Length: 269
Ligand code: 15L
Image 1 (spheres, helix red, strand yellow):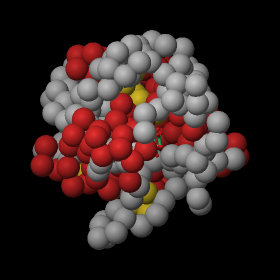
Image 2 (spheres, protein in one colour):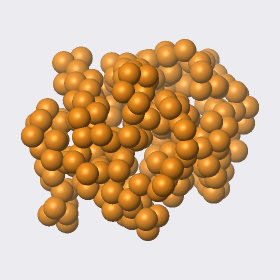
Image 3 (cartoon, rainbow, N blue to C red):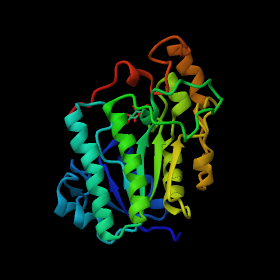
Image 4 (cartoon, rainbow, N blue to C red):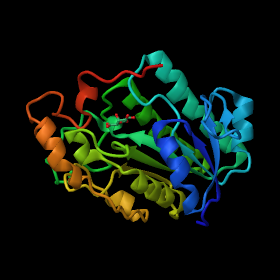
C-alpha cells in the first residue's frame, strides 16, 4: 500500500495522541487533529465530539487513513462508555465508509482480554486469537470496536488493524508495565507499520515494545513490518526495588488486566 500521507488522528489531545502528534510527522504523515477538547498549540485542530456528524464528515473528507485513539480510556459508567466509545466508534466508521477511507488503525487495549490469566514473564504466551475476556465496560467497548472493524472489513472493505495496546507512556511506572510497556517511539513505529502494511483485512495485534518480560506474542505486529527497538528492562531494577515482584496469588495481578479486573481506575471526566 502506498504510504498514506494525510491521516486523521482522533483523540489528539489525549495521552497517546499528544505523543503521536510529535512522533508521526517525521515518519512522513500530515496529521489532521480531532478531539472533543482543544488541542493545545494546534489552532487548526477540530474540537468536536464524534457525535457531531457535520464536523466528523468534514474531518474525514480527503484523508488517506484514520488513527482512532479517541474515547474514554479507563473505566466509566456504561452510559458514558456507550456514547464515547461504542457510538463514537460506530459514527467514525460510518463517516469513513461515506468518505471512502480505506484504512483505520483502531486503538484497542489489553483490557479487551483483561481476564486472560497472566502468563509467566518472558513467555510471550498470550496469542491474539484468544477469546475476548473484557475486564470492564471500557474493555467491552474495545471488544465492540474490534468486532465493528471486522464488520466494516467484511461488509464494506475498510481495512483495520486493531492494536491491543499495553501501557503507552513515556516510561513504565509499575512492575506490571515492565511486561506491557509500549514506548512512544515504538508506538509510532507500530502505527506506521499498521498504516502501510499490505492486505491487512482486519488484523488484531498486541502492541508493546520488545520487553524482556513480555506476556504476549508480538508476531502479528512483526508480520505487519513492526520492528520494535525498545525494552523496559533498564527500568526493572528500580521498579522492583520500589514495588517488589507481582505476587501470583494477588487478585490484582492474576490476570492480564491487573487492577482493572478488581478495582478499575475510573475516568475522571
Ligand atoms: C489502557 O487501556 C488504558 O487506556 C491506559 O491508561 C493504561 O491503564 C493501560 O491500559 C494499562 O493497562 O496499563
